[in-house]
Length: 126
Image (tube, rainbow, N blue to C red; front, side, top):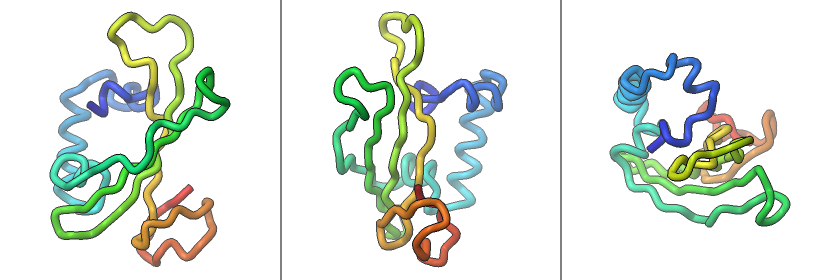
């Protein structure tokens, strides 16, 4: 699913190679239990919000918040920032791509970059 939402930068980094992307995601999942890839593949995830478009229905930026519980019981919230693809989008193709996914602190709160205490666990919020 993440490859469908991947933007040009992600696809460039992985040279449009889905196999390399999946291998990297699996490696990240195995190393970091609270990483997005770990909870997305092995944890319990639910959407807290629907898609919120900036500027209404015609907006080209959207956000969504997902809550997750990792296999070791730690909770995180994830704020997705998505962008609408420009130009022609073929029927059946996803018109949105993920610009970024921000992680909450261990209390489930998001902080502006450099703000808040971040829970002391190195998480970056936005």
